[in-house]
Length: 350
Image (tube, rainbow, N blue to C red; front, side):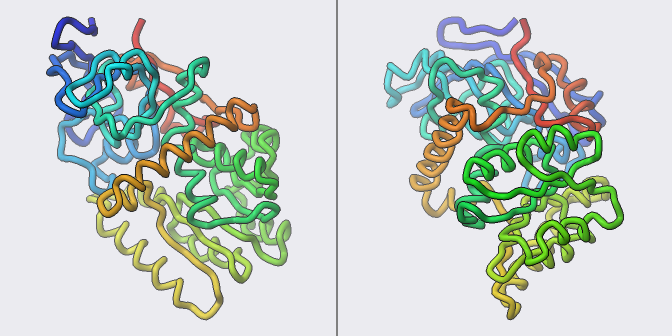
């Protein structure tokens, strides 16, 4: 059983021991030390299963740590203890954090500087869907592509964790959205405010072009692969292609470093073509090393914007399912089934 006792904590963690199938995930308990200077001990209330973990278990996520490790890209939780140089009133408050790894645990140690405040009264699982997915969507739309209100965008995978949030924040900015998804998700995508197109149709890109014959202001593509050029050709002059994944290679063998570098280089070169369009590979970690204070400030500001949209009911979190932490295998299997709308969330065991 997990809990806080004196200066130590027993945490329950889900471990990826090596390249595995979902059934190979291991649940273990271990002692955590007391928070060091600048650290906070967070009791997890919600964490998520994202595409990153699906790649990590295959050893194919760009710059993932060596095995074994605890996955979990983001987390919502309550501070239960703090180390030196952290304000005592931090204890008892709820925060969100982007961890990249470590979130699949009942308790975890996090640098206080990386915490983002979460107002009371919000469902932690709903907030969880807006951390990595929401901040990614917000920054791509408003900071990278800089689409103006009233513009038209294409969201590939509009039923996914990032895609479903992206559709909603674009609609909140009075944008027209065309979203690709399997036919079974079309009603749900339409309810979010997007015009759905079945990505499985051979003429899917022709259908999109018919909906926006003069081109679109931005395309958000997490797939890349052989259709990347088609995404590029959907843009009007001045449009922007924002790629934030390489899902087309998820089942390939070997590491993902060189495929990612090749994709990034290709997109960079496209910026020099004489057509006044832009392209880039989005990384939510850009700027952390060079300007860490500004990097963290942007995250806090963007999550605050998203949580305000949540409070105003302009964004409805898409929770595909909730599983207890110990059922991480089942959660991973469902997330990888490609049958869900939104994000699979892990919560503490009873």
